Length: 392
Image 1: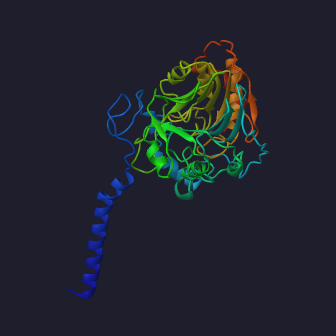
Image 2: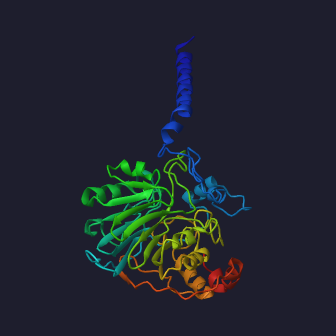
Image 3: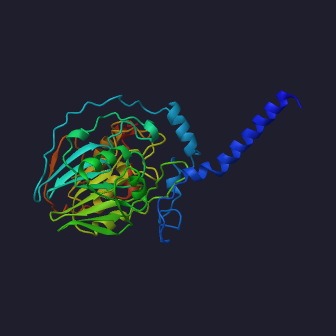
């Protein structure tokens, strides 16, 4: 056998060995086990699932369009999906929030995406804190178009952090590490995410849906059901749970939806059953993955968000999860414009955006005027106007 053949043969053998190692080692390396516990109606002993069904969370595009998740991401990252252009940057005019807000007064500041500072009862509460420039692993992923509404260095001391799930646009380890080192806040999350957060050196309390933890007299956090999924790698899907939160407060509760599709639509009533909701933080963006789409299984859009607002019975709702990271097909300002139109169609009030970085007072809880539910098809018919059809 010639030297050349020996070299080629050795190279082929090396490739075979490397290939075998990739098949046997890499998937296990990527497949993190974040949680171990007994099986339940949403945990099979290895992975979590939505008890109202998971078919829609595995599919980005509407049924019947023939589009795959892989195909969507290929077109997204190559810019070949015909999506409308987003601005490269958004000018914001931040105003420093107060250091503390005592008593039943409540002040809310939208930092961007799902990150919101809520101040009341002497507590500074922060939801899904992400100050990263990109929402993805190793500095990749969608780039922020709006700077955070509060610089991390000037953020008031944080007492309570709520982390809904482990997607990169909701769980940013670098941000959590800095917050932990600076403030040692109480971090509350859902099952398994404490493992990811713990990689930063921070401690987190991980609870299952329906479980509750007291924060101080009169204030507690309950983890609530949502319809979503979780993953930080390729093969660790649904190893950690996703959730919303109700913070029980003397002057009316705070509800943070995290990230959710509509699912069976019963979870807003489950949250409302924990007490009157003074402020709800409801996602409205990343719902359009093909032209004309009004919702995806993992994210509802304004059409369903207005029904979530109604079912929660919230005095005030603020739309989040839009206008910061480009995650889907819709234009930058389509979510709030469509929300405004949907609110007009349903005859509701109290659900409108606030500007990034500008603190807003939240009025005392008042039971909203009852509004009859509008069937989804009727709402879509009401929205079938030239103005809404022109929204991409």
